[in-house]
Length: 113
Image (cartoon, rainbow, N blue to C red):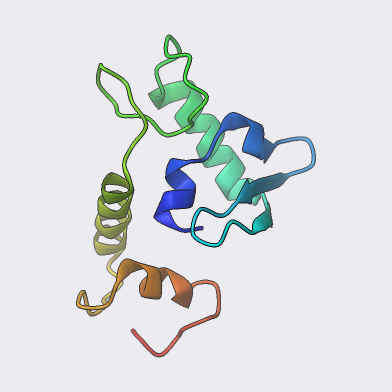
């Protein structure tokens, strides 16, 4: 999923019963159905229960942490991803775009590391 897809993720895109994430990709407009891995499901449930403000009635899943609550931007999502990558200790060449790096984990590009 691209940052723009994460930004647009809504509750109706996640089927916890069928363990699927289903979206229309922003860049390509193509339908994408992904398995909802247990680790992702648990992280989402924890985020929704512990972090996301219950009083907000937005159908967007990922919101800013402080009022006024609003959906995160693509840039904010990219920053969060970069922070998580740095924290993990994985070394990459930051001149590469984040999309190229993320592609490494879905088997499309392994040569960029």
